[in-house]
Length: 326
Ligand SMILES: Nc1ncnc2c1ncn2[C@@H]1O[C@H](COP(=O)(O)OP(=O)(O)OP(=O)(O)O)[C@@H](O)[C@H]1O
Image 1 (cartoon, rainbow, N blue to C red):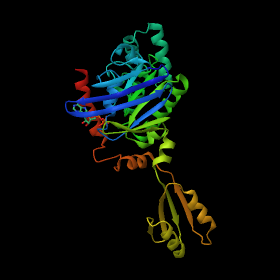
Image 2 (image 1 turned 45 degrees about the vertical axis):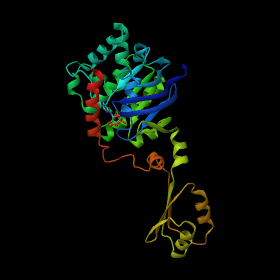
Image 3 (image 1 turned 90 degrees about the vertical axis):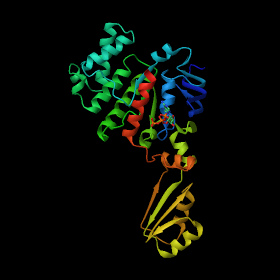
Image 4 (image 1 turned 60 degrees about the horizontal axis):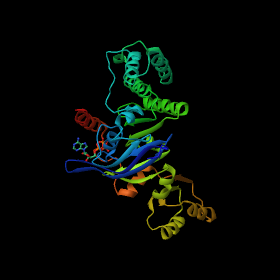
């Protein structure tokens, strides 16, 4: 397996009894990448994360992290990983700095190195003023920031974030992304994010769309959108003769009053036609496709189904977490 890839998997399968959670996953993710695994509940994201973090062995296939094999070199793999799971995992009785120090100790860092790193990460996640307070008194968003800081204490190659912003308000989410971007800039750490939030995956360098244990598509978000999503063009104040003309050309258009909506793969010919016509329209808006549209195009289903409830996802992970660590 190449050292250039921070994550590499070959035909990885995993079954829980007769439930096939992963059905042959192949990934080559270069070092330094911000990689998002986007899929609905039950797609197989947490199973893949558990395999990469050596909590679960693949039923079949090979996987490596930073060049180390998850089956044969689990200790080396763990050294390369920083983990932030959905479930809070701080020791609430310890102070903020003690949480960091304890983690550094577990990873074999010397006391000077632990102190240096702890203050460095506290500064990064803007918790320096809270260093000596107990973790219990922190807000939910601050706890999450501390968990991220703790995960990078030992300078890992890959930071794994399993739905890290579930349950956080918009402002806290935003701050978390600010810190993660600063962290990437400073350290070049690779990030694996699992999410069913489109907005989070849109910022990734590479996205894998996963459903029912299979990677349906892997690529740069903009390319996936261009290849699979239709652009929505909305025209307002459309005169009746123009609408009739458009209906002839685009039989699937949707019209209400003098507003017309059309979904097209490439909006340019339509916009050129509009520029040439003698009729005026009041307003034209062009809305690019989202990764949600890509998922719909690939599966015929919405990404956010009825079960995509963050509370349910948290409970599901808590249940599985218990099983993994036993
Ligand atoms: N411990 C387990 N025992 C039995 N089945 C499981 C277990 N963990 C997961 N599964 C099943 O495996 C499939 C993949 O689940 P997984 O949790 O990996 O998906 P996910 O994309 O992470 O979903 P979520 O967002 O809900 O965590 C699902 O059908 C799930 O019900």
